[in-house]
Length: 82
Length: 413
Image (cartoon, rainbow over all chains, first blue to last red; front, top):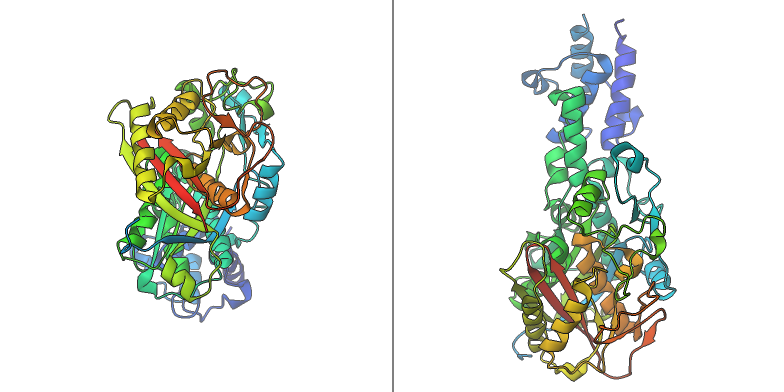
């Protein structure tokens, strides 16, 4: 049961909001986690841990540093589902 | 008191505790003699066979001011401290102070015990990968001091004394030192604890420290009563803003009272049993440090945890330290109302001591049905007591497992 890109974005936005208080509507594909959303490295790890559980995927630590934007994360999760 | 040393003013107060979610409601409930001990609504007694199933929980709604993401990054002990610190800072008028002259000293007896145990459950039940990445910053005992230093931009130093039930008072004592030593002009001090957990209750129960009055929890914390049988666990935080007198006067701050003296001793005696000699040494040092005479002390906010040996032993130690000059002193144990906040206790009781000096009123000790005839000093038994006009000094004791003895003297402004 793969999630669509939109479902992943929505789910990710909920996690980001829950963990950091950033409004869900601000979590857009082109936004940078650090520069635009002001998310620090520990918060990023909480988002990763929660996303892994929500989408039933594994995001290895060495991949996390490549997830600069929300779109990067959505794309990675989408691919990792298969 | 030496002329070269700054007097330490108390200019802000904050607390969340079983009596109230702020200082005003706490003081009102304390003067009304309110018991906060209740049977816990968790099914811990049935699930785990706890012999004690009551405690003094934080008042409902006390943490409502925290945002959800904020709360998620703080252990309950850190949440309590943050809410109390914000109240104290605002109460002090949010002083404009050079960040390098602003310090923080906030103690805790245990630290983030809920986080520690919750995340161990996560490891066992859901695997290591699911552990919250914030676990370490949440469980570390210095978490509250660190988070408050970030909140206020305090860069003169952030410290965390860990001395069991003396931690909160030790924080006040060390904060006084930061000002006297010239390291800071303003220091935010206090203590916090959130440890009403089935494991903690079981552990304190097994060392026979807790009251087992399960059929009458509201009257279980009864210092100086002949039938006292142990303390009642409480939780919460209390924070004070300490300020050099010069700094406070220069900005026209309201001064509640002065943190005038401190005494610190260690028993080197036993890991849990109190030692009157260490207690007396701390009291003697605090009185001398404050530059007052025994006769100036009009009130003692006692450690008084409602244990059979501890309560009377403490009063005898005080009498010994003051060479028997105790007729002018009214004693209270506010733990009869709040339960024992462990690392938060000394700080909350310093707040009560400051308010007593400020309002000239001693909050009552409740639940005394039959005063122990061995009680060697006068107790504010069941009703508030008035303090005289003029200069008054208040003694406040806190002792911790491990033989940590802290005595503080608060002087009226």
